[in-house]
Image 1 (cartoon, rainbow, N blue to C red):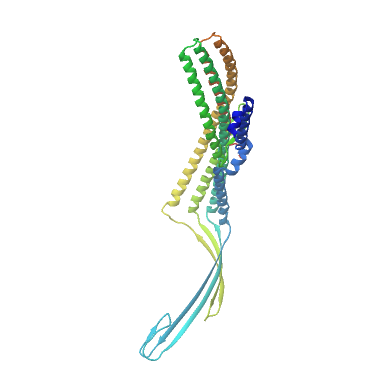
Image 2 (cartoon, rainbow, N blue to C red; image 1 turned 90 degrees about the vertical axis):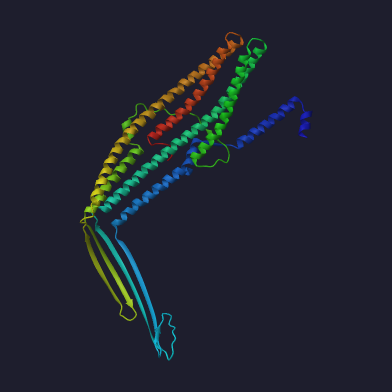
Length: 451
C-alpha cells in the first residue's frame, strides 16, 4: 500500500513523506541517546568508580587497624570455665573380675560391684594489664597512625587520578563528537571540489591526474569521517569505564572544550609540599621513626600485672574460692643479636624514608613545572590555531574563486584546501590537548573534581 501510494504521489508529496521519515528517524536516534553533562559524570564516577571504592575500603581497613592499636593500653579480661564428669563401674565374680567402662562383664559364679562418680566444676576470671613494655605499645600506635595517614594521602591521590581520567575521557568524547561534525564538513567540501574539478576536466581545462587526485582526497575524507564515527563509540566506552557504569544506550557529552586561565608564576616549591605525595612520604617517614621505637623495645624490660578470681566445686569435697594477684617483670638478657640488628635495620629504613621524601619533593617540583609549562603552551596554541583557521578559511574562499576563473593552478588550489583541513584538525586537537593538560596540572597538585 505504501509503495502504491508513493507511485501515485507527486514530487512534493514524496518530498514531504521522506522528510517525515527523516524526522522520525532523528527523533528515534535522539531518544535512544543519553545526554551527560560534566556534573553528572562527576557524580556517577564518585559513586561507581571501582578504583574509588577499593581505595576507600582500604582506607577503612587502615583506620580500623589504627583504632585496634590502642587495645594494648587497656586491661585484658578473660574468663574460663571447666566441667568434669567421671563414672566407673567395677564388677567381680567367683573366679575373677572384669572391669569395663561400659559396665558389662561376665564370668562364672556370682557377681558383685561398686561404682563411683565425680563431678567437678571450675570457673575463673582474670584481669591483666601491661604496665610497661619498653615503648612497644606507643611505637605500634604511632606506626599504625602513620600508616593510616599515609593511606589518607593515597586516597586523596587516587581521587585526583580518577578526576584526571574522567576529565580526559570527557574531553576525548567531546573531541570525538566535534571531529565527526568537522570531518562531515570536510567530506562535503571535498565532494564539491571534486565535482568542480571534474567539470573542468570534462571541459578540457584540467588534466585527468588532478581529477583523480581530487577524488582520492574525497575518499580519504570519507574514510576519516567513518573513523571519527567509530572513535565516538570507543570514547563513549572509555568514559563509561571511568564512571564505573555499563552502557545501555549511547551517551552524548554535553559541554565545550574550554580551559580556565592558569595562575601566573605559581610557587612550585610551595605546591610540592602540599601534594598528597608529599604527605604520603612524610607519613612513611613517621612510620619508619616509630619502627625504631618498636625495635628498641627489645632492649627494655616488660612489666605486667594480673588479678584472678577462681571458684571450684566438687561433688565429694567442699566448695572453694579464692583470688590471686601477680606482678611480673621480664628483662631480656641475650637474644642472639636479633634486637641489635632490628634497630640497625629500622634506623636504615628511616634514612631511606628521609631520602625518598627529598627525592619525591624534588620530583614533584619538576613535574609541576613541566605540566604548568605544557598547560600554558597548549592554551596559547589554541588561540594561534583559531587564528590560523580563520585565515585558512578566507584563503580557501579566495582560492576557490581564483581556481574557478583559472587564475591559479590546481596544485596551488589543492595545497590551499589541504592547509585548511590541516588547520581545522589542529585547532580541534589543540582544544582537546589544552583540557587534558589542565587535567594533568590538577593531578600534579593532587587536586581534582572528585569530592
